[in-house]
Amino acid sequence: MAMQLDHVVPFGRLFEEYRTMFTLTPADLQGSILSVADGPAGFNAQGTSLGYSIQSVDPLYGFTAPEIKQRFDAVVDNIMAQIANSPDDWVWGFHKSPRELRHNRERAMEWFCRDFDQGKAAGRYAVGELPRLAYPDNSYDLGLCSHFLFLYSQQFDRTFHINSIRDMLRVCQEVRIFPLLTLGSQPSPHLKFVIENLTNLGYRCEVQTVAYELQRNGNKMLSITSP
Ligand SMILES: C[S@@+](CC[C@H](N)C(=O)[O-])C[C@H]1O[C@@H](n2cnc3c(N)ncnc32)[C@H](O)[C@@H]1O
Image 1 (tube, rainbow, N blue to C red):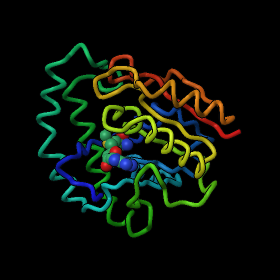
Image 2 (tube, rainbow, N blue to C red):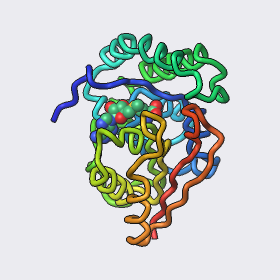
Image 3 (cartoon, helix red, strand yellow):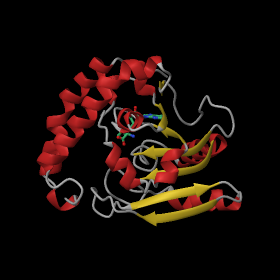
């Protein structure tokens, strides 16, 4: 079904946030990276400007940059008010304050909008969606998924999660997913099932503590490597 923009919260993160959430080392960044559900992040734009090879995929890329920005502008005040009203749910480490968080989301959107047309023409932003990616087997060294899988556990069931992650593993040698909390900052109810299922198939699953935490207790990343 075609994506409806008014159902989306197009919040994107900066390259430095991705680097910290996924503990990306210089060696990781030298490989080919597929960023799934990449949305209006600055990761591809900033990473490309640093010389890295990043492919982004998201159903959102069927819209234009001005349409995505318009939707961001329509929801940002409301989201920031929700955050301000629940101060105990957030950790002000990477972003020092709600004000800085908003500024960083705006910066990510600016990077994305400036890059989107040329990046889409170059094939760096592709329309596509989980649970099935349109890439051949073993096309990328590393697959990333920031703030989609596990976060939307209420909206997407465990079958969707396992099918999506297995398809990312078909395409990528290693997959990393962050965070492992739901939108309500609860541990995802699908995590145990996913880890058991993948471990039984011979994949190595490791939950790592990372230096990025915005949702309180949301400082865990799942790394999965192929047998
Ligand atoms: C909260 S945003 C995260 C954007 C980016 N990864 C980041 O962390 O800055 C969630 C993204 O998931 C995308 N999305 C929704 N359904 C999807 C699906 N079935 N497959 C892949 N991405 C999807 C949305 O379009 C949106 O861009």
